Image 1 (cartoon, one colour):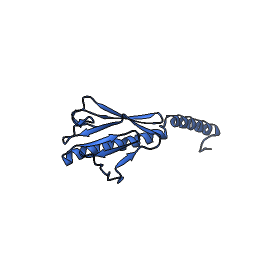
Image 2 (image 1 turned 90 degrees about the horizontal axis):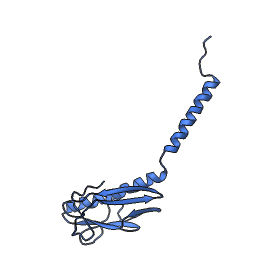
Image 3 (image 1 turned 90 degrees about the vertical axis):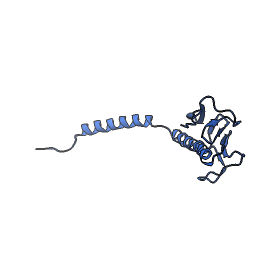
Image 4 (image 1 turned 135 degrees about the vertical axis):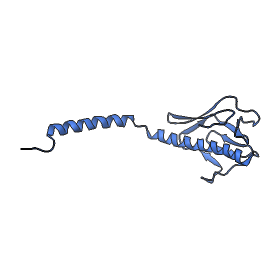
Length: 149
């Protein structure tokens, strides 16, 4: 007589193996804070890149002013640029987030980054760190080329 299906012992062993694999996978999954931090870092990266693109396309200097609790894109006269996605001039950091260092980055019409005075080109790579509950992401701005990553 042929028997189809699993014995009780086989089912118990299979469920135990699945439970072990599942518990190992759960401990290796990133936290929700990781995804929030990565998402906000992507927004900041996009806005720094937008500042650079505006400088190139408008043929004038644009700057991004990174403060303690918000940042803002400004033209060469210091007038705030309204972000087309949010329709706001300033972007406030979500609760629990910090961005360091507080600085101003100026881009010329070629997309090259300058320090806050707009006269001195960046001499070394600028690292901007976005932190939320111990999770950090770093955005780098390369001198001379203005590569943002």
